[in-house]
Amino acid sequence: GKTATKTTISTLNINLASTSPNYNMMLSRTFQPLQKSITRRFLAAPASTSSTKASEPSTAGSDLANKKLRLVVAVGGNALQRRGERLTIENMLKAAADMAPTMAKLTRKHEIVLTHGNGPQVGELALERSGATFDVLGAESMGQIGFVLAQAMSSNGVTAVPILTQVVVDAYSDAFKDPTKYVGPIYGPHEAQALQQSLGWTIKPDGEYFRRVVPSPGPLEILQIDAIKTLLEHNPSVLPIACGGGGVPVSRIPANPQTLQGVEAVIDKDACGAKLATELEADAYIILTDGGGIWENFGKPDAKEMSEVTPEYLLGTKAGKKFPGSMGPKIQAAIDFVQQSKRPGAWAAIGDLKDVADILAGKEGTVVKTDVSE
Image 1: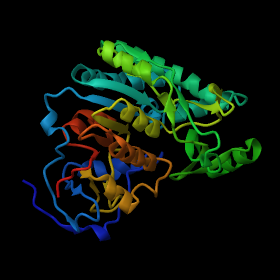
Image 2 (image 1 turned 180 degrees about the vertical axis):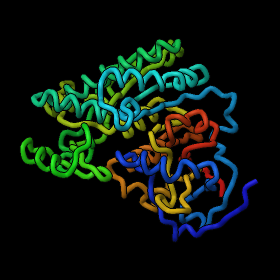
Image 3 (image 1 turned 90 degrees about the vertical axis):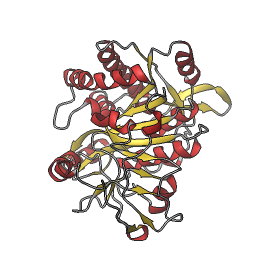
Image 4 (image 1 turned 90 degrees about the horizontal axis):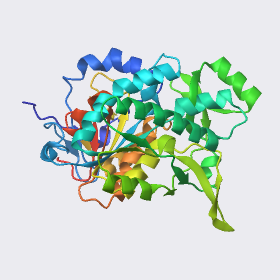
């Protein structure tokens, strides 16, 4: 059994498992050999308790073993591009083939809607076609990734239906003043500076490297939501793939709100996934990464992956702010879903793609929920 430990919440130093390009190396060298031996803790809101104690693994899935759940599952664009590999269709097909058996197993037990990122893919398309706008490039990447995923799922006995999803945003959002969404490949400092000067890109640090960033306004309305609901209600054996890359950003023309126009932006897929999960009244929203859940004391010898945590605790400690371009949006999306969902007991989880079954069982990843054991 696990022995109880206590720690004062006010002194916790919360850092996160970043999904920046150097994160996998850090995780594999530093944490993977220790992962099975670390103490996983339940962290409640700072206002509700001054200490935490070690406990058994999260109970998110323990009482749901035989219950069919409605799940929205989000996979990052990096799930289709292994670290260090070139972004090619062949490599995307291989990565999707590796992921598909896990997703197929989920669909046989639960009702799934799959959403995905497109950061590497849409950035690559932008390099190839500098004259195209990001709404068009987003639609192209959605079709490309949707095809790759649908083909992989078909090979595992699951019919997947990619839905070209338009998402309304505010064309005058403050997000356009401070671009934050990473797209495309990583660059060294000299190459990044040259691209910034020659092409007028906005470039920001991403770990030890640099990447292009574009505006990322929040999702306001998912236009194809009724089509997704219809698929779930009338053909539950089909796997909808929706809101890929956060959806195609569009705005309504104020003088004629029925008329739509594309917006030069990339919506964060985790934020859009949270809205999708809320509107579908999903039981849970699961965000799958290539680097695990939320870590306490990240980078230190006593680092621990949090097992359960409340939205209030994450907000109170400003967890994720240190990594605004990677883990930060995932944490905020998990918080948004749990706080905005009308579904009783709704929860979110962040964890590694390979651990999805254990995330549902409460053995891996970090679960965000309102009723955390102390």
